Length: 190
Ligand SMILES: [Ca+2]
Ligand SMILES: [Ca+2]
Image 1 (cartoon, rainbow, N blue to C red):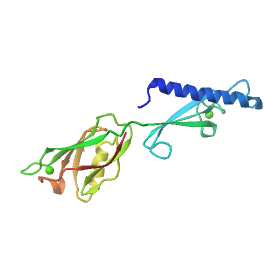
Image 2 (tube, rainbow, N blue to C red; image 1 turned 60 degrees about the vertical axis):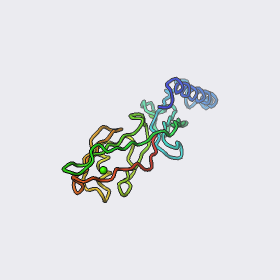
Image 3 (cartoon, protein in one colour; image 1 turned 120 degrees about the vertical axis):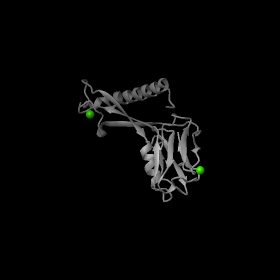
Image 4 (cartoon, rainbow, N blue to C red; image 1 turned 180 degrees about the vertical axis):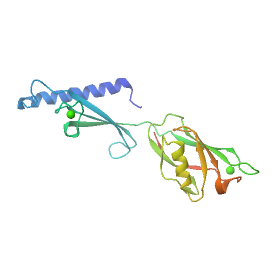
């Protein structure tokens, strides 16, 4: 995460303090009462969109009016977004491990660099046409499914962990062929 634990704590304390002050101000309505309700904060991953350009974390806070230990939607008093702002220095590195032909299937490897650091975003792989957007933490099976949707690929075998690197062996109609190297496209990772 971009935000260190200490700065995050400061932000949350600031939220809690300003919220408590506002509670005091309207406290004369008597509804909340001196017995008080527990204040709760809930966090959620915020995807790319109008609130965060790429992604981030959504913090919502409020009083547990119905005392169920959960901050329900109708108990939310306010929302704060902490958005990822790291420099877009991620890239896809694609290399050919085994050149296909002469009895060998082509094997290529796709790595997200710096490895293991991405926290959100997506990319596309191009082989004649672009795949749909592949999430930064796609499993090998998801990468394989995305590639096999392309008209130029009927079968590939993808292995590797989520976050990569992914090893891709071309099979099916592309068995034993020297195929073009995959290309990275629309890389939008953080
Ligand atoms: Ca509740
Ligand atoms: Ca090749």
